[in-house]
Amino acid sequence: MTSINKKTLLTEDWAVVALGFIIIVLILLGLHIPSPKFTWHSASDIGALFHSDNAVHLLIQFLFAYAVFVLGAILTGKSVKAHLRVFPIVYALTIVALFLAGNATVKDLGLEAVIFSLLIGLLVGNTVKLPVWFKEALSAELLVKIGLVLLGTSVIFSDILKAGGKGIVQALVVVLSVWYFAFWLCKKFKVDEELRLMISSAVSICGVSAAIATSGAIQGDPKKLSYVVSMVLITAIPMMIGMPYLAHYLGLSQEVTGAWLGGSIDTTGAVVASGSLVGEEALKISTIVKFSQNVLLGIAALAISIYWSYTNHPAGAEPGSKPSLGIIWERFPKFVLGFIAASLLFSFVVSPETTAAVKGTIKDIQGLWFALAFTSIGLETNFKDLIKDNSPKPFYAFLIAQVFNILVTLLLAYLLFD
Figure 1 (cartoon, rainbow, N blue to C red):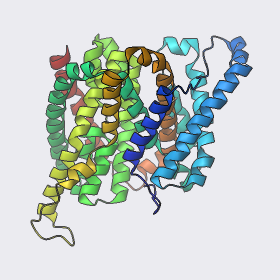
Figure 2 (figure 1 turned 120 degrees about the horizontal axis):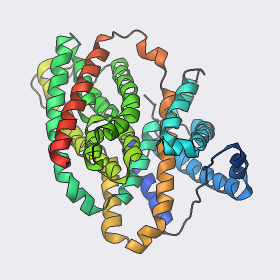
Figure 3 (figure 1 turned 180 degrees about the vertical axis):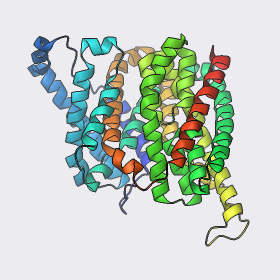
Figure 4 (figure 1 turned 90 degrees about the horizontal axis):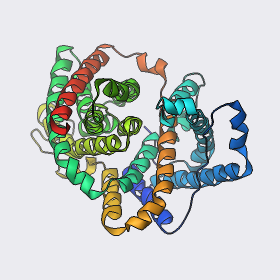
């Protein structure tokens, strides 16, 4: 886990909301951040990508993103020096990914930049020994969440009303059924109770965030938490890439596909990446469904805290004592509030004309944040560390529970959104 110093001004989630709205407000006030172009058909077109105008656009985008990234370090109390050194490397790798994704043949295949970002990050992260300070400064979660706050500008209130009720119903059924199945299965595999709780929450609610919230609720072992986070990242990669193509093969509509992706894939960033492979409607529905599950995170953390206090009586706690109701607010993912606020702002305050004028700029910046985030995720993931000193039984249980999750969510998505 990344260390936080005493100069922390905001928690990561609140910093994400602040940074997201700084970007939104600046763009609404007239700041134009040009987006460099990466479209090319053959090797003869590559030279045009580096002409003076495109190079200037690239520099402006880099400086803007650099400033936001470093400001995030200041707000969250992380090492500014480390962030200053790390971001240019992450940005350069991400530009390579954007270049590869800009090829016309690649675009025809529907392969997005985030896939190349992830693969490039994995390649570098597993062939180069990166120092601890470098990995701590990557801030993948912060980058993903900023992109999600910006995504809220494209989801108008009527879209939430249209799919939100169905999304909540699906989230409740999926979370309850998958959580109890995973918990029961882990018990059959003789997985210890700490891992059992973290795995069940991760596979049923929202992946990394749920695992972190559960670990905090039970004061879990950091090594066990790292193991669960690794499971989530490993399974998110093939699901993120494969499920959109499977949905196309099955002939599913964008609405059904979005609900399936949002309810099945654990990490929010991977949901967004998968939804973007299918289309705008799938992206919106998948995000709404995933956020419906995220809303349950605080309630789940509270329930797990009560269960843990009654059954384990941790040191310093009185037997049978109940945890504070404030845990719900403490565990609630605050960046969801940023997404909702951005959606409300563009639904009821910003005029349609202004929305149309800034839509392209915000979407380009949003895409950049997601690409940067998945480069960072790849750099953070080391396959050798995933299997070292870890029993395979929890991973087997996680995989089986994930398959159960995919099937149950597909059935519900078809019944509710078809």
